[in-house]
Amino acid sequence: MSTHFVGDTAALTGRSLRHITRSMDTIVTTAIMPVAIMLLFVYVLGGAIDTGSTSYVNYLLPGVLLITIASGVAYTAYRLFLDLQSGIFERFQSMPIARSSMLWAHVLTSLAANLVSLAIVIGVALLLGFRSSAGLGAWLGVAGMLVLFTLALTWMAVIAGLSAKTVDGASAFSYPLIFLPFVSSAFAPTDSMPGPVRWFAENQPVTSIVDTIRNLLAQQPVSSDIWTALAWTLGLLVLAYAAATITYRRRTA
Amino acid sequence: MSTPATAIEVRGLEKSYREVHVLRGVDFAVARGSIFALLGSNGAGKTTVVKILSTLLSADAGSAGVNGFDVAAQAAEVRESISLTGQFAAVDEVLSGRENLVLVAKLRHLKDPGTIADDLLQRFALTEAGSRKAATYSGGMRRRLDIAMSLIGRPPVIFLDEPTTGLDPEARLEVWRAVRELAGQGTTVLLTTQYLDEAEHLADRIAVLHEGRIIADGTLADLRQLLPPARIEYVEKQPTLEDVFLAITGTAGTAADQRTRKDS
Image (cartoon, each protein chain N blue to C red):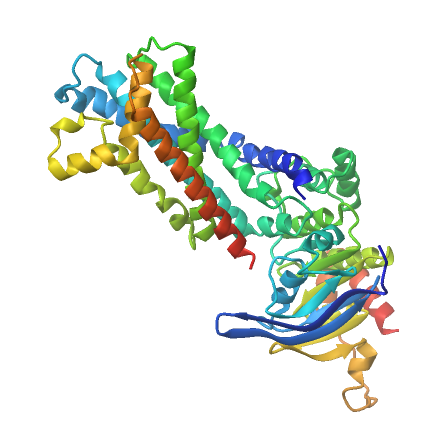
């Protein structure tokens, strides 16, 4: 069956990409919340946060990008849930196609949609004064990090979409993910936080990812953060993928 | 690949959802090229049977074969042989009718999906609506599109799960016509229905599924013999509301014709 995997995934990805291009509002709404957060922090709260010599826009952008992804993947869970509800999933499953291609189509579509949202957010950040002297290599590093993070979160969205009982339940899983960057080094340096909060902030995945992206964009050495960040994202990706696959198989038992 | 005379063979099929014992040993066989109706009230387990036969669900016990392949052990071959039209018209609402057909043709790995789509649009009187989003279609049009999608790749066995539920009388007749056409071309059709007249009009053989078991199985004539022989009574024949409806909405003839043809 795997002989058809590429062709089937391409056909189904084409289908779900059309869902997105025919409702561009889903991409725009994905970008609106992070842009609003960025405006709020840059113009209202950011003045009170000491980020040393780094401009505040440059400081907060990595965290805002992660929030963009966290809110964007909720649509994947939503679309997957609708496919299951409408019966079209069963139609595809009763056809001689590679079964995993149905999930991969949603994952690749999520990746494409999130990259567009991220580009919009970076565009707004440029208008707000974000500047980076990073070269191609560093930008590729940033892109790679964001892609890995998107994939990890998307596979979590797949689990949510497959196991949800209601539309609201399908996207509710993303709320804690959207919140996570607030308790990290994304908006304020962790040194200013009290003991236990600081411990949590410094040891949760977002901080190492944010620090890595921030250092890459500022052309600073990335230290060991990059290995911690990669370990977190790859670890989450593998776990989420495995759990999603098991959930998927169980649905057809 | 041999082509056995029975297209579908079900033996001792059992399935439970937690404590609910939905199927308690279902047996039936469907001859190749025939229309077989699985009749039962809501919750009788008709959809469960269809899901097991179309490899969406695995049975707890018993065996089922479709087109000579075992649904559990040869799921891939079964999927090559079948097509499923589920209880709710499973079309992609965001895509146009034509795009829906092209997608299925691509997923069936056929050459020239565009031509296949155009042919089917014409056959099901959807050419004009072909470029419109399926979300704008009426119930009957969606069902037609749904059935058209099931015909792509000419699978030898087609499952139709309550194909006319929720349709108006005209759309129902259209679906019946499509089903008869299919059987005429040698396709085996298994349909589930809760409408007695649908089974009576369409099916070569009817099985009644009740409380998880087949309690009757045979041709209409066989089933009639389960009751005492007919007495001859004289009754005034009033037109049914359906006859009236079809007459005044301009599709007169079709329903009455079909009824007379079957009755004679």
